[in-house]
Length: 115
Length: 113
Image (cartoon, rainbow over all chains, first blue to last red; front, side, top):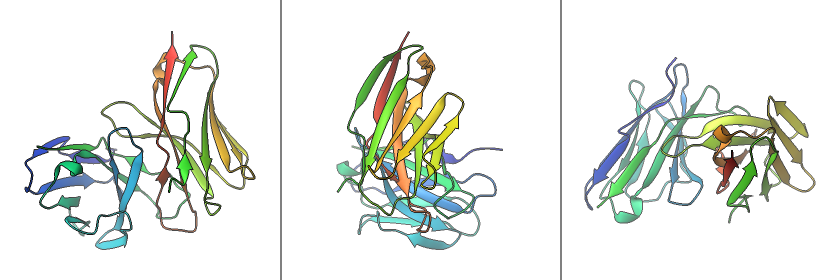
């Protein structure tokens, strides 16, 4: 049973380009969460999605960032017109249930570097 | 506003001794707590959790203690092993809320052989 798969593992973008980060949840999991970790900081919640629905996007920057989790295929975190401050590790997690008392399983992350 | 705090950025312990990692929280609505371990260039790995109806949960060498009145939890690792060297994150959530973990900033544990 494969774990949470994220790709690419490393992504380099020039300022102004778009970054697309992909996340395939664990088999049977329909709840996906994106977190961002800036250097020397903890993980910051960005967005929580179920299939075709955004449940909580309170941690998403208001501009340039969007996320989706279509009926078929992986969840995508999209960052438009990237800036140097977007450089971070982006982690996806998935869980079986959306209630708060089950553990989430994390992928290995995508390290975005904006040059 | 840091709702989950890990005030010790780093900790060094001799192999075989006990490691104690601490975590404080401010939001009284949190009722489910977790510890994750993270190696460099990898994603966090779930270690152990505890709900607010308990004050202790044990899994092998790992025990989590919860003191609700003090809004404090701790992770005990005994005996510590060199392979335990990693960054440990404390996280909290509300069972009745959306599934959103709030993470602390982590404690880097180094177990010395």
